[in-house]
Length: 155
Image (cartoon, rainbow, N blue to C red; front, top):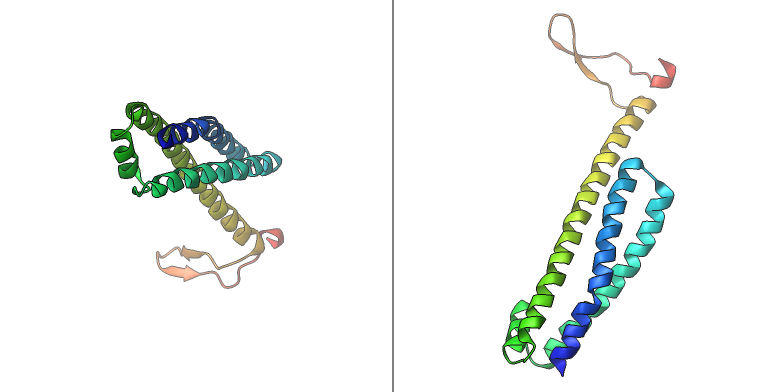
C-alpha cells in the first residue's frame, strides 16, 4: 500500500520536475538577453513548481517516517526490499533524482550568471558615477593615483 503510494508520488513529480528544468534552461537564455518581463514570468512559474515538489517530497518523507524508516535513500531501499514493486520504485526514484540534480546544476549556473552580471553592472555604475580613483602607473613606471576622479558624464 505505502509502496504504491510512494511510487505514485514519485511519478507525479516527473512532469513538474521536467517543466522546472525547461524553465531553468529558458531562464538562462532570458538572463543573457536581460529579458526582465520573461524572467518575472519564469520566477512565478518556478516558485509554484518548487512548492509542489517540496510538498510531494514532504509526503514521501512522511510515508517513510510512518513506517519507522529513515527519510532518505536508505529508507526507500529498505521499503523496496520488502515490496513487490521495489525495483520499479528504486528505478523511478533514480530518474526523479537525476532530473532534480539537473535542475540544481542549471539553477547554480543561472545563479553564477546573475552574480557575474551584478558585478559587471556594479563596475559600470562605479565608472559612470565617478567612484573610486583608478590606480594607474605613470610614465616612469611608479604607482600613482589621479588627483581627482571625474564621472564619465563630466569628462
